[in-house]
Length: 187
Image (cartoon, rainbow, N blue to C red):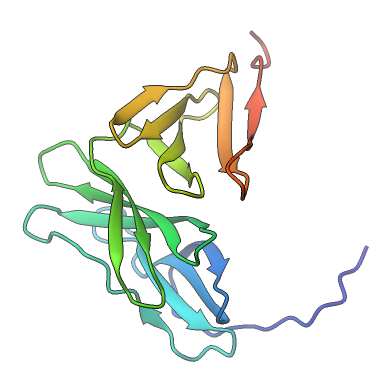
């Protein structure tokens, strides 16, 4: 099978790259780590145009007094054009804290969607179109839990699966799709 589309190579600095999203205005946004040393670097969100111009780090809030390291990881592009992302603050001698946030590429404004401690090891998130609820899954190898996030707090969302992963709300908010396993091989 072949794909008949033009391929464009964008020159970029060396580093570790993560997920990318297309914005309606033609920008690409992705998370990028210029120094992949886990003790020194920080994952940041960047944007660039398809022609390679305009490479810039997004100006997102960081608490440098409290956080030894702050990571930003993209989740998804929302129906209203904002980007959902996860911000994790890693203090020197304390438990990391994670927040689900949005960024508006038109205004540069950020917003914390759920302002309470999130489940430990949880990373993959999706928001309902009205942002009143969200889903989050763990990043623990072969087994993972699914959590329902609401404005008042979170709870485990048990579907009877050993692994529930990469949930996504439908654009109308009526459905949830996810990858899941009823059993784990060898058990």
